[in-house]
Amino acid sequence: MITRANLQNRSVPFEARYVSSHDSVYRSIAKGLYPAGGGVIRTSNNMEDNIRKQLRILWTSPGYTPHAFAAHPRLDSSVVESIQTGMIKLNDTAEGRVLLQGLNLNGITHARDEEWNDIRVMNLQSLVDLKPAASQQ
Image 1 (cartoon, rainbow, N blue to C red):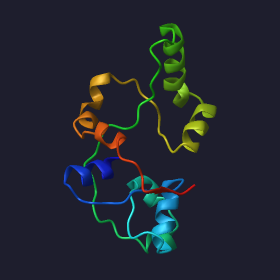
Image 2 (cartoon, rainbow, N blue to C red):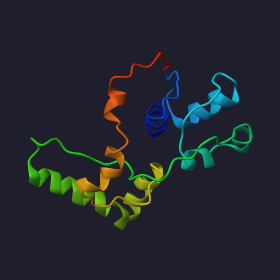
Image 3 (cartoon, one colour):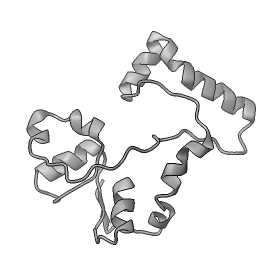
């Protein structure tokens, strides 16, 4: 989304194609299926050397606030608080750390809505109207 927003906001034409994961993006580029793609440094750094060596980073975005967990407003606040507390405490137990490690997360922290103002200014809502040229499953 960040790459798409940046290209759109700069009026750079592009044709979006979708694959199943960041790893699939890197592999597809290495195979020559696509000329370029978007990913994140963390997943790029985790790729096998033989794939990573075939890629060249063209642009790196500034850092942004990471993904949020959100709750529907109809959900009872006590349920939201219970889930939130449980997620934040995952790093406090060995079992929780294993679960976080499986997601490549160091932990989960409490956040406030205003922490995503850096995301809001990217005009991502305009991307909702963009239809991908094709989708690959």
